[in-house]
Image (tube, rainbow, N blue to C red):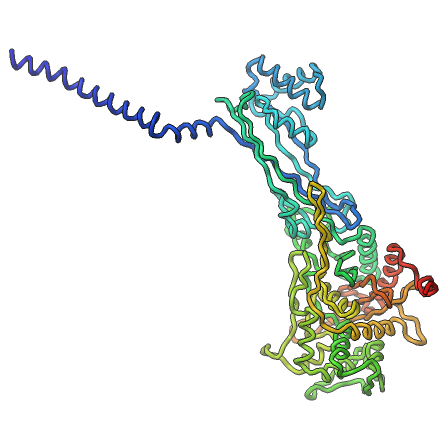
Length: 583
C-alpha cells in the first residue's frame, strides 16, 4: 500500500510540477513584456497603428531676367478610395460626403456628388478605385490633411515650358523623383527641388486613418525660383539666326552666345544640335547626346580669333604697339618648317592693326616671337585657357593647351598657337577671354543665374565675380580701337558691320584637326562687340563644318551684324548717330 501511495503521489506531483514551471515561465514573460519591455512594445504598437505619407515639395520655377516663366511645375492629385474601408454604409456615407465637399471646394454639400462617389467605389472592384483625377494641388493637400477613411492620393508633377523650346539646352530636363538631369535643372537641383514633408496619422486595423486620431504634418519646403541672366527675346533671336545660318551655309551645327561683357551675364546661349522639349524622347538612347550643351562641353581650334589674344598679350607686355611694323613675305619658317598665310597672300609692310585687319598668320607669329613662350603661355593662363570658366552649367570642358612639357611639343606649336591652332577651347572660353580684352581688362566669371527667389519672396541677387586682370585698362582700350578698325576698314565695307551701331570684332576660320594633320572640314566663326566705344553686348557666332566653305568673315560676321542691330535696339540703346549728336 505504501508503494502504491508513493507512486500515486508521484503521478499527481509530476504534472503539478510541470504546470507550476509553465506558470512561472508565463509570469516571467508577462513581467518582461509588461514591465521590463513595456516601453519598447508600446512604441512598436504605436508604429504599427501609424502610417506616413511623403508630401513632395513644389519644384521652383526658372524665369528669364524679366520674370518670364521658362520652366514651371504643375502639381495635381489623383484621388483613390479603398472599397474595403467603405464596407460599413454609415462610414461610407460620412466619408463620401466629406470627400465630395472638399472636391467641390464648397462648405455646402452636393449629395448627388457624394452618391456618385459611393457608386464608383461599389462598382470599381476590390483594388483602390480612382474617384477623381487631376485635382488641383491645394485641394489635394486639403483632402490628404483631412484623413478621410479609405482615401489616398497620388501626386502627379508635370514640368511645363510656357515658351516652348526656347532655351531648352540651357534649361535642361528633370527625370524621375523630380531630379534635374541636365542644364540649369541639374545645376541648381538642390535649390529648385526644395525639401519634402511628411504626413503621419493614426490608423485602425484596416489601415485607414482614425477620425480625430493623432495627425502630425511636417509641411514641405517649396523649392526656390531661379532667375536667369537669359533674356527670352534675345534667346529667341539667337536661336533663329543660328538655325538660319546652319541652313544657309549647310553647316553641321553651331553656337551663338550673347554676353554682357561688363558683368559676364549670358543674355542668350543657343546651340545646335541640342535638346528640344517638343521632340525629346528619353527612351531613345541616341537622344542622350543632345543633353550636353556644346557651347561649354565641345572643343574646337578657334583659328584667327585667337589673334585677338596674341595682340592683347603683346600690347600689354609692351613688345609691340598698334603701329609697330614688320614686313610680311607671305611665309614664316620655324626650324625650316614653312607656315603660310591663310590665303597665301603677301601683304608687305604692315602694322599690328593691319595684322588683325588682314588676319595675317605671319604677323601673329611675329608678335608671339616677341613675347616668347613663357610670357605668351602665362597670358593664355591669365585669360583662362586650359581651365573651366566656372559657368553655372554642368559638363564644362577645360580645353587643351599644348606646352613644352608635352612629349611631342615643337616650336611650331607656339607659332601656330598665335593664330589659333595647337590649342583647343570651348566657345564660352573663347568668348570669356575676348570679353576681358575689351571690357577694361577684367576676366569675369560667366554666369546664367541672376538671382534666387524663395517662396516667401525674398530675393538673393548674384553679383559679378572678377577672377583676374590679364591686361591693363589701357591695353584693353587699345585692343578695342584695333578691333574697331577690323570691322571698319578704309575703302571697303565689312560684312560684319552693323548698320546702326559701331562695332569691333575678329573672324576665325579653322580646319578641323585629325590625327597627324587637318582635313578639309572647317569651323567658321566671328566674335564681335557693340557699341565700339562702350561695349554692351559681345557675341560669338560659330558654324561647324559648313559645306559651302565660306570663311568666318563671309558666313558668321553677317549674322553678328544683324543680331547686334536687333539686340541693341531692343535694349533701347540709341544708334550711333543719335548718341554722338547728344554729346
